[in-house]
Image 1 (cartoon, rainbow over the protein chains, first blue to last red):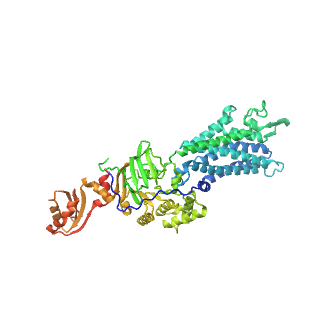
Image 2: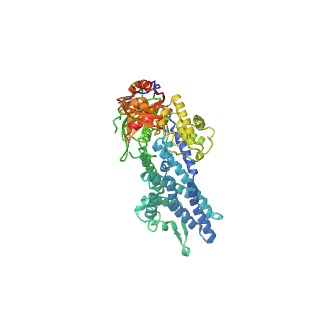
Image 3: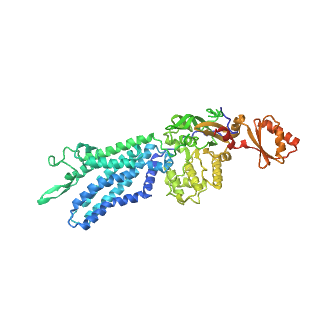
Length: 299
Length: 322
C-alpha cells in the first residue's frame, strides 16, 4: 500500500551531471593528509626510537671496544640488524593498518565519502605509509653509518656505501610495506600474522641454505648487497674472509661469483614485481570490500 | 510482522525519486539489516524513523555506497551507489559515529575534506569556511576538534557533509547526544538547508525530533518498511486500533459517564486525580462530532483536548509490535 506524499512536494531535482572529476588532486590531498596522520600520534616516536638503536649500539660498541673493525660493525648493524630485525617491523607497524586503523577509529567514512575509488584509496595510503617507513629507515641507516665511521678519515668510501645501503634498505622496506599492506586486508590479526611471517619466513627460511629462501625478501636484499658491496675483512694469519658469504650461507667456495643465484637486476625486479603484485592484489580486494564502521543491532 | 506493513514500491509517478531502493536486502552474516526494502524518496526532507536496529544506518550506508546490497539495487540521482565514487560529489553523509580526526582543527578538517573532494587549496579553505559558517561554527573553527563539545562535533560532522555542496544529504542520527539548544540549532540548520534546495534524508529513533522537522516519514522496523508518507496518512492506517483522546474538564466523572453510553467508546480512564480522562475510541470522527453536544448536555466545559495519536510516539506504539 502506498501512502500519499505530503501536500505540495518540492519540484523534483534533476540528476545533475557530476562536476569534473579531479582524481589526481584528491589522491594528492589524501597522500599529504596521510603523511600528516603519520606525523601525529606516538607511533612514529616509538618507531624513531627503535630505529635509533643501531646507531646507539654502534656508539656503545666503539666506546667500549677500541679495536673494533668498522666493516664488521657495519655488516652486523647495517646489513644484519637493520634489514632483518628492524625493517620488517617498521613496515609491519606502518603498513598493516593502512585502512584497518581508519576503520577501527571509525574515520574511514570520511574517506569513503570522497570521489576516490577504494583501490586508489588503498594505493595512495600505502604510498604514504611507505614514504614514512622509508624516511625512518633511511634516517636510521645514515645515522648508523655516521656512528660507525665518524672520525675515521681513512674510510673514504663510507658515504658511498651508506648511499648503497640506503637504496637497499629503501627497496626492502617498500617491499615489506606492500606485503604487510596485503596481509592487513587478509586478516584482522595482522600484527600477530606479521610477526609470525617475520620470524618464520624472513627469519628462519631466509637463513636456510636452500632454494626455499628464494621466497623471502631478505634473500634478495642480501644478494644485492653482496653483489654491490665488498664485505671482505682481514682474517687470521694475513688471510681475508668474506663475512657476508659466511653469514648468509652463500656457497662461494665452488661458485665465487654466485652465478647460479639471481643477478642484481633480477633481485631488484623480483622485489619491485613482488611489491607491485601484492599491491595489485590488495587493491583488488579493496574494490569489493565493505568497511563496516558499526555493528548492526541484532534484529 | 504486523498487519500495518506497507509496500510502497511506487511513489507518485510524476515525481522523479532522488533515492530509490528496489527490493533491497542486506545481510550481515545471519543478521538481516534490510529485508526486501523498496522505497522511493522524493525531494524535500524525509525522516527515517525506527527503533535501534531497524535498519536506518544500513539504509543510509547503502545509499551512500558504503555497503553493497546483498540483493536488489540502490540508486541515488538515478545512479548506482556501490563502487561509484563520482557520485560522492553529489551526496553528503553525516555519519552517526562520533569519530573525527581529533588532532585537527575544525577549519583544517573541513579544508581537508574539501581537498579530498578534489578542490584546490584556496577553494577548499573557502568551502570549509562556508560550511562552518552554515553550521554556526565559525568562531570555533581554529580550535582542536578534541576540545569540541558534543554539539560542536555534530555540527562539524554536518559541515563536512556540506563542504562540497552536495545535492543530497544523508544525516544519520544528527541530533544524538546533543543538548536541547544544540538540537534546536541543528533542526534549524536542516530546515534551512532544505529551503536552499537540498534533498535531506535524516534518521532518528527519537520521534519528536522527526516530527519537529518533517511530516514526510519512512518507518522502518526490523529491516522492513513499515510505512511511508505523511504522518497523518500513516495515522489513518491505525483505524483498527482504538484512538486515544485526552480530555480535561471540571468534572471528568460526569463527562465519562456520558461517554460510556457511546457504542464506539472502548474504554475510559481517569487520570491526574480526575482532572482529565483518556478515552479510547474506534471512531474518532464520530467522537469529535458528538462531543460538543455531550458537553452541553452534561454541562461540562472542556478545557483541554488532544489526541495522543497525533504524536509519532503513538504511531510507533501501534505500528511497531513490542
